[in-house]
Image 1 (cartoon, helix red, strand yellow):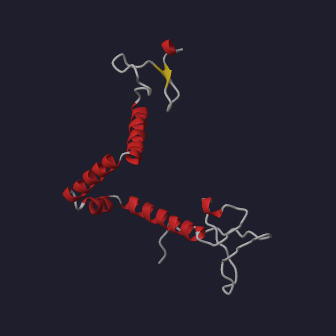
Image 2 (cartoon, one colour):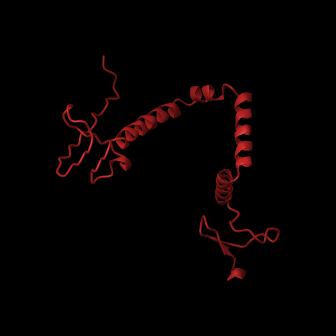
Length: 150
């Protein structure tokens, strides 16, 4: 089987190892090599405190040499800023929902991609939220008009 080549663990394609690297386990495709390097780096960060500190120092030095990089990037990429803002709102919503004490809903609301709102009278805190029978209300956001009114 070894003479027929190996199977890349990432793309699942067959490949022949380099004669200069007979222990090669990943094919030579650029995406597979990038993934191999990325996984090595992640494992090394987890297991080697000295390597982790060296990487932190390198990042810190780079930021010191490029103090305006983030500000300039955000100015040049407003779509990134808006996407990040929306993503942060979604993370905040999920975090708030995950903090509900003893939330025993049968539906794992913290993993939904939709927005979920639990509504109940203000006098009752959202503690021991045992919802045995419930009604689900689906609200659609109003469509924004692309025509400026005025």
